[in-house]
Length: 90
Length: 281
Image (cartoon, rainbow over the protein chains, first blue to last red):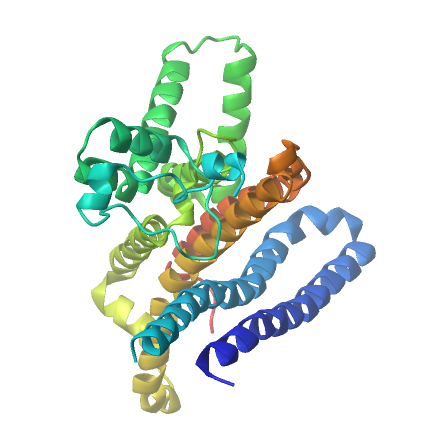
């Protein structure tokens, strides 16, 4: 088990965990919105703005994980090439 | 690699002699995330093959996002200037739809910011339309690439919003009021609030600095994810020339629209948070 295995194992797992957390958060947000619309259907227009903002803020955390995933992929390829160069040259 | 992949993927073209001799000044696309060709990279490839100058194509490839965002800006300017030039009392369909869009943006900003928020309608409307068109450009098959899939573009937009919000805060609250807003000190502060003021100041500053970071990363991550998704779908069945990416276009359209909306919405909300509150804390 070397560094590239570690990165390659952790990156998709990290993204999956982040998606799991945001799925739960978004589910609760949508549940709240559905409850509110059910209680007072004519307020659904006023609900739209806070709902969308809340969902965007929750989703942003998963997007940070996606960005870290792309950054980690760059590190992964660099690690693999460095290991190849090391094994080939050394 | 089949012929199709070499045609549509970046970085797989046969290098010209000059480029190989010069040590390859074009950008390395060895990352495992596939990127599709767009008009500028096609032109850069053509320039690479026709002229034996490695610098020209490298410049073109490096400045793709700026070229596209300036082109989109000019397109929007020309289009809206042309619509405004032929305003009539009884609007035709085009003028009517533009007026509807403008009216809904106007109403939305006024709902959130109040009557004096009208001066921010151009800013927020421009942000929304510009980011929406930038996002949608990535869905255009060969000619298009979304500039918002690069962190430089989104970060510059987010920094612009950040500076606008701070200047609005300083102007509407006064400089002393601006600092008091950061330290959460109302006009007649409770002694506990005075003691907690340095801590609150520090926390607020960090919260303010997190805003451009989150704005830029949210837009960048979403649009890059969309682009990569489309590229992966294209590459799945490209060998048999089946446009599988059409099935992912609805998600991409929804995502583009929502990201543009969220950017404009959050700008409005940040401006609102920096305005004088009328109620007691």
